Length: 571
Ligand code: PEP
Ligand code: MG
Image (cartoon, rainbow, N blue to C red; front, side, top):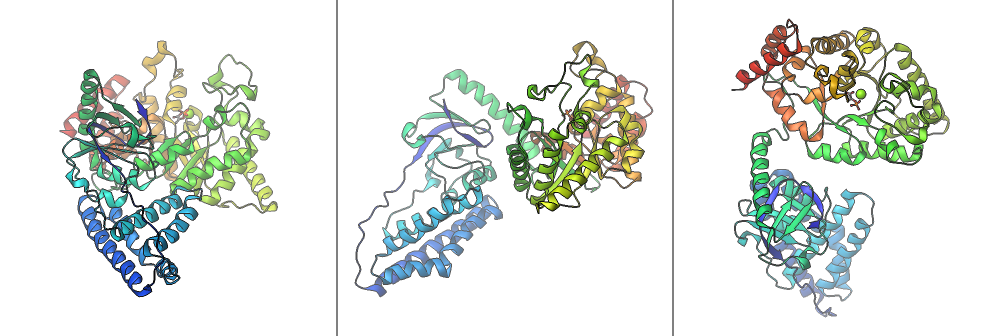
């Protein structure tokens, strides 16, 4: 099995179609007739631009406008007076068109590829694409025509360039394998837009795989199986069909607003555990981050991460999200989440013990660097701070006081932050539900953590199998708490979200619509199914169902009613 980066999900089963690179070598010449050489260059550029525009139109029809813009960008790039002017200067100095073009393009490629960010790196791929396109014309070489690829083709190529993509016939190409590219490269963006499974950065793929060789690729995990066994083909065929079926049903929700059947807009964001997941969330079409669980930054290490290390992580998520909201929860350790180097004592009832905000307020040496890192990250996007496991008002006011202290320190150090940063409360204890009216006066937003709210409301350890029959958010006690929290938030104009697993529960969603939940935060892979579930209910229908459900006495009745009504509603 070969490994690479899973860049476009889905399973591809087919045969390799190897695209070997053209030999673009030439012998540099000293030219005498400058005007004739300038004419050659201009003609080649003109030919390149005409072809690129035609391909862009084709991509616009087959893939989308955004993707076509990549090729239109190539036209603008080579028509840029500076770039064209520099190439012409070299020709005027006696170089042939090929050498002049290559020298100037390589200069840009070097500058762009030495940058740290993916986007600038991507510009290097664009310049390379332009350079090779024009060189090919100057050398009189034909471009490989991918539109000749037979059905069940798995394209194997060093780098999938946007210009190549124009020739892809979606009905024939079932997979893409490249030697270069990352999740955010054009190859990945185009593969995802075309909905073709893709595995990128597979080392030496062009050498290792042979033309017409049978191959399976899994674009979600980034694996390539050359010459699969019969059982593997059977198993992957089943997985592929399942994936296609699911995608068909959900695909139409990509890029759509999240709204109810009667057009009420709500926010649909994602839960993440590290900054890299922010990209995954975006890829899954999340509108922001509703819960960044920061514990993993602390758990993955043998010692406390420094303020700078934390800043890097939070800043990265903020930058990936480009101004979309990123709610970052402060350290929520204790209970089931242990961090050995913090020296927490073993407790009889760790879930009811010295944990989360209780611990943090007693350990400013741990908490302040995190708060300072969060504040500093807020200079790079819409970062918001969320406090976990709140049970009383003082916890919120104390955290706010500590944040103020951190702001003053940052002021004197002349470090930037957002002075209006929003500070929210995670509503996940029965105490917080009971004083939701009081907490609403202190918080900029609420986010309901149903995983813990269920545990603490029902007095049931969420990991204990013998009491798991009680661990259900359909219990009237939990539903009443959720409803109350939303109502209290609304009364004070505080937006209320939900980041527990219940936010993605299609059965519960009509109740959440009826209660007036503003934001749903779910795992990235549940974004589209949640958008779909929300779109199926109007407020009127949701209200009618909520009224019935809230009169029921038992969890069993609630679940049976939600199942029955959803079943008939969704037919
Ligand atoms: C919750 O309690 O609902 C929640 C989202 O937080 P965690 O699962 O991390 O405790
Ligand atoms: Mg929790």
